[in-house]
Each structure stands twice: as structure tokens, then as C-alpha cells.
Length: 61
Image (cartoon, rainbow, N blue to C red):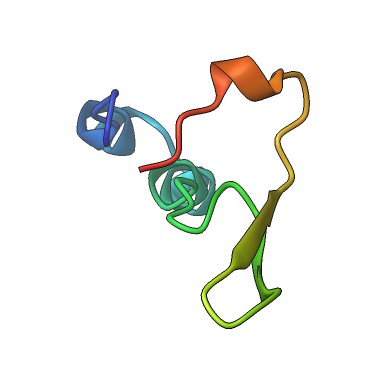
């Protein structure tokens, strides 16, 4: 999801192309980091690194 259009800034700044490209491509599709472990025949454990959230605030779909 893109929340800000950096295109007008490309015309008015010199030397910041790399910075704007990094901001544009900074959205990670693999967040949050997770690990899926098989614990039994039909059982799995999903471990996620989500700092600052309680288990009640997390919804897994």
C-alpha cells in the first residue's frame, strides 16, 4: 500500500533519487517475520516476531 506520491519531489530535488527509491520500495511483504513448525501429523506451531502486541490483539487469517 502506498500512502505518499514522491513524483513531484523528483523534479525539485537533486541527488535524492536513491532516497526516494528506498522510501518507495521500503514496504516489506514478508513482515512480520514468522516461522512455521510441524509439531505432529496434523499440528503446526506458528511463531511470529511482533513486538508490542499482546496475543489478544493478533488475528491470524
